[in-house]
Length: 322
Image (cartoon, rainbow, N blue to C red; front, side, top):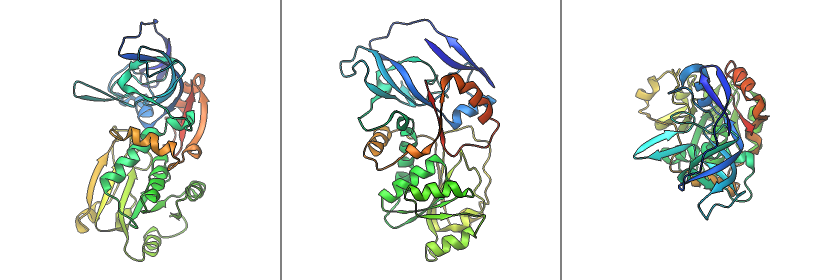
């Protein structure tokens, strides 16, 4: 079996592994699609918990070998971004090896069958949807309430679509007009471009002076609140969300947290909502096909890591074809 491994910071190498027997409680998967996430790039920059480590926290593939009669050869499956054992919670590609390989052997408990109707590329967004569900559940978003989303990231696009499903009203802030146009294409009607108008005044207009009940900051892409807390109502809730736990700093004026009595919490995974995420994509409550920036072959991955580690965080997702 062949895999791509971060042997040290900034060094992604191909490693050939010996063929192994598949334990009775495991399954061998031929990887078809994986993704490059913020936590992978963080590891590339030297922030991994250990080296060597195989990146990519989530993937989809085809069953190659399994002793479980419910999994048939060739069946499409998702490989969980999380592994739980003896009370320990581990994130793949962070606390243990991920899935950037041609074949992997993983526990049956980390495998989810993928329904028909979900494309191969859509599978790698399931964790994002699970995290988005967790965010909205934790915020306890209600009908006709306003939720402010800072930046057009994949996560915020998904939260915006789910907010509409929950009959809440998302307002998304972004300086890139093309990304705002995509937000509107996805049904997120209220968009604000800070380069063209005052965010505070526009939010005040949209909400008829009530201001926003909730706000979400995707720290993987936009770790800067840029004074947006002034757009919150008294007693509102703020969620700091993202997949990369290695974030070093957050830029924000926290005075409104005190003066407005805001509640703040953080979420860095979608544990417990993976099956909900699968269902949300399968039923097209959330559409993710337009959230793919590009698909690259696994032979191009080292070059992509090197390039993206030097660039600003990506709003959309890069998918790896294995």
